[in-house]
Image (cartoon, rainbow, N blue to C red; front, side):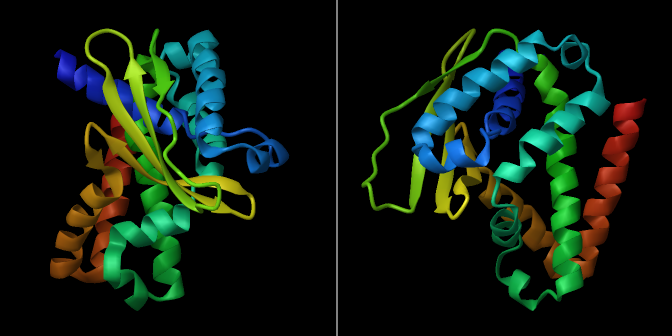
Length: 211
């Protein structure tokens, strides 16, 4: 594995691992950059101290991502953004399936990378935002071996605290990347075709993890 590939892998893991947040009351009181900074330390310490995660126990890693990450993301907004304008044409059942399959895709895509985290740390840059802003970008760098890796978060203020709805890894926003892929699927196969493609991809990923 070359350095750039490893950087992508580690950054991918951190881009999800660092989304985990504190209990509701604390999250609601914290500024977005303070939340990212504090939680990054807590989550990295947990990963580094968990021998099962380090050994690649996928069941435990997936459970960690599902329980700690996903509840702290505005997942409806993230899914709608990746689907684009076609989201408005989707019926409630299709929207439900899209969110389920997209969630599974993200978990399966990034959970394997968690075991790659070793001695990385996160540097949070000063937040450029006004006190009244309800959407901000928290800019950070992953520090470890080699050059720092850019890792930014788009966050929004909600009734239950700050939530992440997009991630920038090395200058590439995740939602935009998936939107391009999904648009191609929808144009040729429609919404149901996209759902089927995601389901097939998730089954293949699950089989790979078991083998």
